[in-house]
Length: 307
Image (cartoon, rainbow, N blue to C red; front, side, top):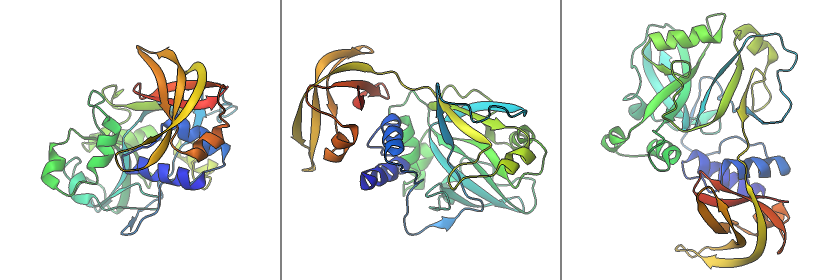
């Protein structure tokens, strides 16, 4: 299962996810899998590590309970996270998130989306999300996949936007002040709009005072001064009638769940992918058991748990 989750993690960061966020989160929690990003050759170091955010779902305990600090809320955009380094005001390096410590050089592409010169001395890192309008099919995949394009001219044809959400090192007392400065330099920022035209997968709750944010520190993967709040996608309960094995175009044999037909949204669902035998075993599925089914991205039927 660890190998499967590593494969799923890599596919996600390359813009070709093989399972939904809900499935990944559930399996990662069940199997204590907490790796971030993936490893690859030909990488460059981020000036500052890019952390992921702790995920807090509706009904979970509030990590900030008892803290007497101003908390700001911003949209959690669903695209491709990147870092951009400036040296004495000049754009010098843009990287994919990669494993959070190193990423792939995408400077030439990102230079077409952001200011190439800003009024700030020294070395700084600006982080944010490259996003694509949600009315385009598979918008998140398109945004992430575009960063891997070899042809710059083709990249320029993609409807991409960069939205900044942080800057390091911080020079102001409050995060919102740093974000306002970025906006003044010509950047789109998470606080300058609700960005409802782009895919989102929750909200980000963050302590505004930078000193308190840093005082809380970090785990190996997450800052303690911010978290991502998500509402669980509600599924529909039905019965697992059978499992059949299907040979795909590439020759890979994979299991498919045969379900008692159920209506989800406006579609009748009677089949769902099960990926592989490890996925079936991890959910403890048995013929005849009740399962919760969602339509990932409101399109692909998925079993997220056994009832």
